[in-house]
Length: 170
Image (cartoon, rainbow, N blue to C red; front, side):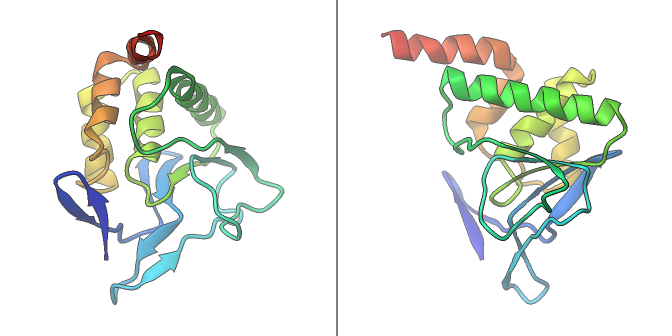
């Protein structure tokens, strides 16, 4: 089973979530079983903070877990959507600085969650290429295969927000 991307297909992840750095996990709502089937990644109370960029009923987290949700598409973003990503990344950084076990998730745990996690890593002092490299090494080589998101990170989300706004004013 595979996920569509512009230049072909990528395999679904082999695990529901992966640790990127201490206390920071990245994942999705679905993953591939050892036999190739599709499994639901259900969060209960494994994390103290969950940031979701995609949401589906029955996937958690438990009501006592701090949960931040905002739908972000896996495509070019508007300035308002980029601002949401920046805000969610700040939430992640705050949770990490407080020593809280944090999960950032989207549908499969590749692009949208990767964008927020990479931005959090950048805020913690990593440069964009290093943040992307760490995510690909620890989650999947297919993480952040949305090249637009990598370009946003390389330019800086603040600059990407301003530039994406130029399209709206034209």
